[in-house]
Length: 369
Image 1: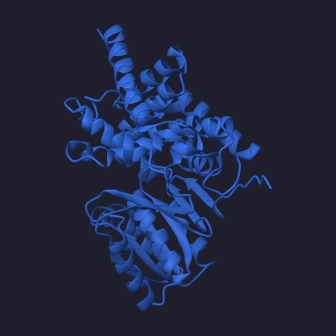
Image 2: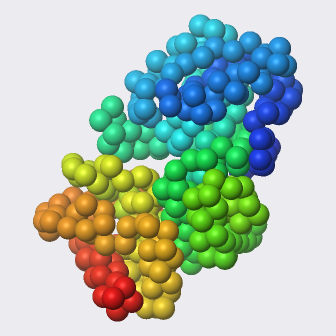
């Protein structure tokens, strides 16, 4: 049977100073919580989260996340959660912290509360984690039976984060419709376990529409650390629309190529998830034989947001053909998402990487003189 499947978090809350009400929401799902955040995020938001939870008489265990969403870290924090009898797992911070929180919640069979401090990825709403080695090399996905029970996005905190995080989230979200469209056209299945629903398709399309309309205004808003309607729209697109769109709409080549980049050593590891996805999206557009006008539309927006568009921009200017083939081979292993949308070889992907690089260099030569 060809089933259409759509999944989503139980509740999504977004707005200025939204974390001030976190205790009101969490008290309905449990009274013993573990809060996970890295050292930096404890000062930015997690201490306030704990304060507002305690205001509602919720007991809190505090844990410092070590920075890597690895099996070892997931196991370490799960043990702490179990020993403290925590029934609510609250992740505060970026994508790797949130993915770890989801894994911990799964281990203790608890309720999952996600509090992103940036709008840099679409990880918050999903029922999966990306798992890395202790050294930061992509190892695979971990899937869960349910999406988070509560996602709270405080746009005042997002507005105060570095502009690079917002642009990275926009890049990640811009891949949503590109990838979902390819899955739909090729009748592939999604991470939700079935075929794309009309709802997921509409959300993915609206995500792209919103970003092309408001991304530059939102980027300027973050420079001013101001919460504006444009920023609210882009935060929702980066987090909710992209999250629902990728999971129930489908993933294609852009994220597979991102994962392929983790096979290399060097400065590329200093790029964010979204920055690598931006280039991966251009590669997917090249693989699909999309028009010059469509590809350049993406390049133009990426450049305006200070995102990478060439191999030089992603620190691979001097990469050998052998290195590029390593990326392409990792992007086309059997379990990768690229196969939901394409029938391609590693050699095809390598050629598309070089093509995308050349398209962007040509665009810069024409329009950035």
